[in-house]
Image (tube, rainbow, N blue to C red):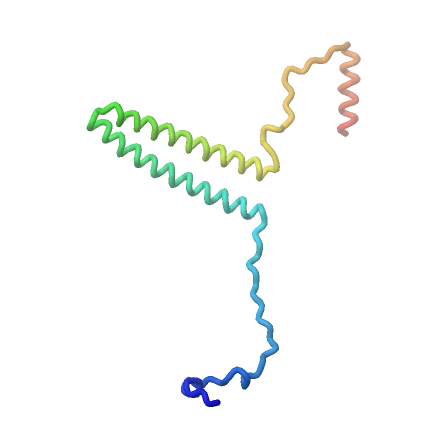
Amino acid sequence: MKDAIGDSLGLQPLDEVTESKAVVTREEPAKMKSNEKLDKDYDYARTNFYNVIESGTEALEQMLDVAKASEHPRAYEVVATIMKTLIDSNKELVAMSSKKAEDDNDGPVEDKAVTNNNLFVGSTAELQQVLKDMRNADG
């Protein structure tokens, strides 16, 4: 059977093509470690926070101009709402950064042992013995 289109395009029928034994494999992209994903998410969220805060600051300035020009109570209410939203966004950004710093240090910074108002009940000789025992245990 003659294939006029195949001949005009210079193609060979499939049964005449020699089979290649080469196997083409598709490489899977390297899987991201969970820390890399968290770092990527953190960077993305931080960028979004910056964008929201910057846009909110611009909106606040524009709304403040509107409020001054109109002297309408509702306009001032909107200004107050925008200010509160910006403050909350800044707090969230700082909290997120603090949590990231804690995670990078393998635990909260506040977990350091701090003892305030410690009271020992006993004689001076007993206190000295306890302190001596503590030094021997450390060294």
